[in-house]
Image (cartoon, rainbow, N blue to C red; front, side):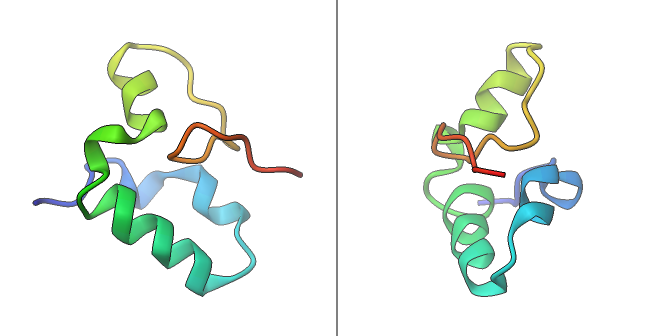
Length: 63
């Protein structure tokens, strides 16, 4: 499976302080088997605005 086309510019990952945790999200949702379940991708494909703090699983990342 190819990487998500939006991975390089995805703003949610800039909010992570722990590289390991960020990489887990990326491996599952941006490069792996859960890519089609990504809430960010779904909103973008529907032409809706994607909040910067929206996690791939649909939850909002706290400030």
